[in-house]
Image (tube, rainbow, N blue to C red):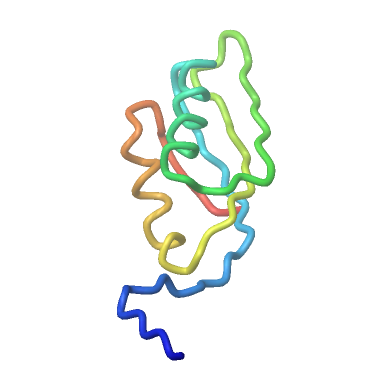
Length: 91
């Protein structure tokens, strides 16, 4: 017996671990907005470190995110759409 399935198949794409530094405003709320965006986009996050200092206008998030080649191209644009994000830079 042969079964033919013409449904579309998802192709496998390798994921690379990419470290990014994200600078944000808004203190802890800005950092939480970044975490919410990463989760909503479905990016697997391997590491998430935050530096928030009282009296300093900018906070820093350093994270390692597992991305495919296509996702690498759009990662900075997607996070840059968050109003509190000042910059997204690969480390």
